[in-house]
Structure formats: C-alpha cells, structure tokens
Length: 138
Image 1: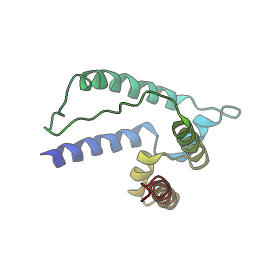
Image 2: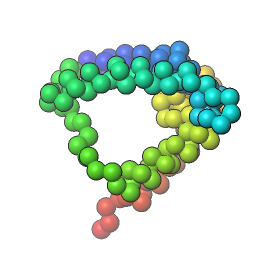
Image 3: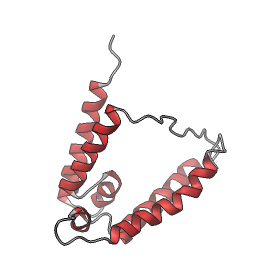
C-alpha cells in the first residue's frame, strides 16, 4: 500500500511540475533573471505550493504516523548554521545555472532531455561527495 501511495504522490507531483512549467529550464531561468526579462509566473506556482503545503505540515506536526501507517519524522533542526547556508547557496547557484532543481530534473529525465541527464549525474556526484565528506571517521 505504501508503494502505491508513493507512486500516486510522485505521479501527481511530476504532472504538477510539468503543467506549472517548473520542468522547463528556460522558464525557470526567466524567473531567476531579475535584471532581464523577468517572468514572475513561477512565483505564483511557488505561492500555491506553499499554500497547499502549509495546512498539510500543520496537520503532520500533530501526528506520529503517516496515513500509510509508517513512521512520520519531520525535521527538527531550527538553527541556521554554516552547512545550511552553504547548501542553500550551492542549490541556488546550481538552480540558476542549470534551470533545474532535483524534482524537475528527474521529471525531465522522462522526456529524454540530455541536459537533465547531465544535471542528474552531477547531482548524484555531489550527493556522493557530500556523503564521503560527512561520513563518520573511524
């Protein structure tokens, strides 16, 4: 049952990314180009996503299990520290240069986009480097 819920949620998320234009790097770069011909339409998509997620996260904080029955663990960190800032900057630079963030890049793999393949391979390499750098030392 959990796999079916995950599949439906992933398909819904992917369809939403495609319909909103978030999987189109040109549209994303247009949104990020504040000094050029700025396209504010993705701001509405983000505002809608925040509006939909806020009640869900508010309800989730009151629960210990997900609707599928598995454990529900929300992030508990509240401090802004150097790893958070560095990670945010790295994410933002990558998003601005490539026009992709992880979700839309994975959706774009389904279209056979060569830039999405390169981005996802670079993302996997970055995740591996992070895991290697932050691994527990013996």
